[in-house]
Image (cartoon, rainbow, N blue to C red; front, top):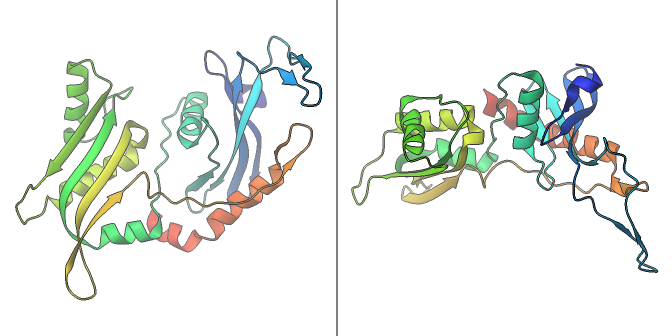
Length: 254
């Protein structure tokens, strides 16, 4: 796509900028374009204030950086303000007119804890009304209940109560597969179960699939008159975040 084709117009303008392709990597910026309620410029020494010199078709860009590794099929996305990974996912879908889904990747310790669960006693998830009703029958039924009540969200909690037994692990894994395929529709997903410790005792544990996602922190300098984060520093941080975890990401992606 040429640069103009990478711009989404309308009520929520956004764009993919400076897309670079090198070997297995796609590096780029995504920007939400703020067209209204633009801030004024205030001199902290004098208190003088004036409007930004912005022409009618221009707006303020709120940029994030991303790096997609095609070999691992993993994308690292900078978290910033209101423009985060789900917004980038939607922007790519809108521009390409193709369904694009990002799957949240759990931290290594959280994924290992889930893999070691001997039984699951509770699953708790919250779903938002999707654009198109898809997925497995159990999740589709929840979506239909939202439609019937003309609602926006549905919270589902399934538990074994006080009985000492497990929910169906196959059914639990199907919900997780739906979560991986329809992540933007899930607002919460947590699983409570029991993990056997080294001493042989069962230990109760809860895994929150949104809060325990893999997150990497990095310090990046600000440069230039706009005091924006240094572009090269952001690219290096994203590349490093994947390289440091590539063995785990390879196992996670299967």
